[in-house]
Length: 237
Image 1 (cartoon, one colour):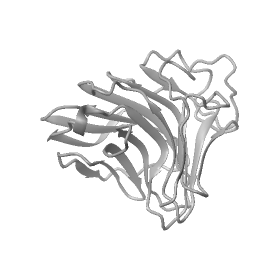
Image 2 (cartoon, rainbow, N blue to C red):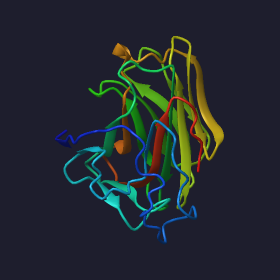
Image 3 (cartoon, rainbow, N blue to C red):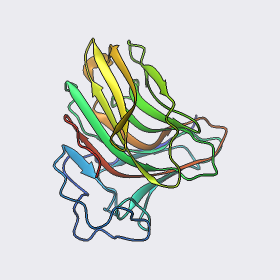
Image 4 (cartoon, rainbow, N blue to C red):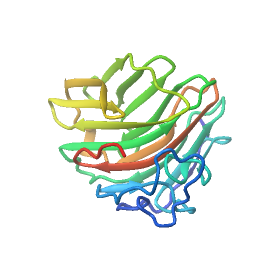
């Protein structure tokens, strides 16, 4: 598939949260300004330039900042029309030599009235040859992997909420006897224990959010906000 790929300087650090000039608006459902973020990486898409993020989109898809709608302030608005499957922003967060535990927290807003079959988050290597992901479907939620030696694939019956901001936390304990878990609004919804989660070559440094992957036969739109990553649990706001 033809893809337009723009790499911008992908930085790490505590950015985005607690910004004094964060624009609160009708899309804000979380109240006043966020507490300071102490995680390894934080971003709430308040920087209009999105300088922290690289972007990868198929022609006709978009992954742009929406200043008027977000869990707090602005958000990332990813659109992938029929015929496309890629509309995401990415940043290199973790060391190339993967830590023992990886946690990623992201808020996702999926509107009703569309087929839901999408991977909103990839935890991947820089080359993109292996990923740990979670997927949202009309009637289920799953965690799975691409390009891993271990067979990571577990489907849960948790139906994704629509028309509201939802907090998802993906946890990976990396090892020959590893673990993958997905939490929704603080509650465990699906897990895969006792599996080999060691990434080939050790690299699991890149975080991709928005629409890193979906089937090409239908339109998809997601909003993503308040992304955070660390080696310990971050929690929901």
